[in-house]
Image (tube, rainbow, N blue to C red; front, side, top):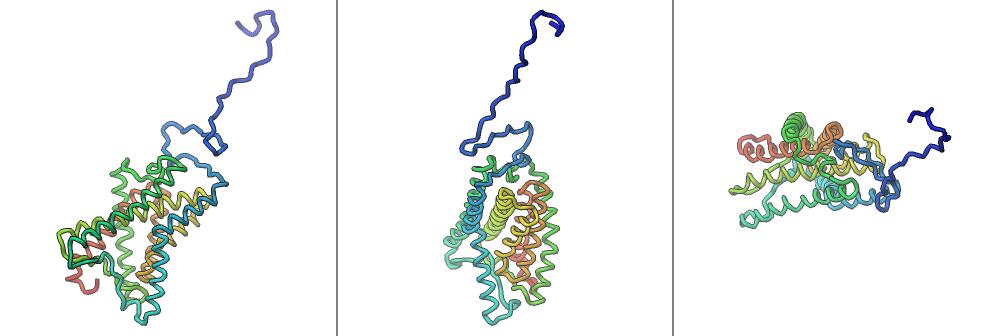
Length: 297
């Protein structure tokens, strides 16, 4: 029937029915539907201001259990090095050392523990991010959905960081503000190379997942701008390498800034895990293989 037909006057126009949005439990805020085809990393997240202090305490606890704790001990180590009466250039920082070289089977057990136990930090931060954001691995790009691109970006980043980093380390040591870094000191066993590979992978997984995926996300939840967040992440990264000397400190700050920029641009932590792992593999395996032939290492 057209509007001009009929004899009765039209009644009031009924209000359109609007669907009621369910509220998230305990938040008092409506749950926004997820756009079709969007990944969690691309969705807007509105942090609850009332939870900001709790997030701050959470960050302190997470760092205090792992990399932040390492930073504190690293600061103490550099104070010790500077006050021991020997120039930094005359001191050595030994990585990947044997604990019981006279008992290889027990030494292997120590290496396995040193490799596996730090991975609890990765599980912890994924769990905490999942509680607040959901699907944490997709949120920070810690998955295998784009293996070829992640591998390519990771290898390119490793080359861009690793080669200049080696040159900067040698320069810093020559100028006297860095120790000699002995990157691999395990006794020669059948498991030596696998242990070094596993150590490199653990370093990449822990550092990039915690310092990029977790910390930058949590600082964003607290309302931090990108610049200060990247600066803090890079500063902490440099701090827990301070035991090597000021060259290791500055070099890792630069690495942290570059990695942080890449993470924000790509939205994925996996390429940086690849890059870090490759850099450490080259350092550990390369040092072990070339040390007998190159006196300047």
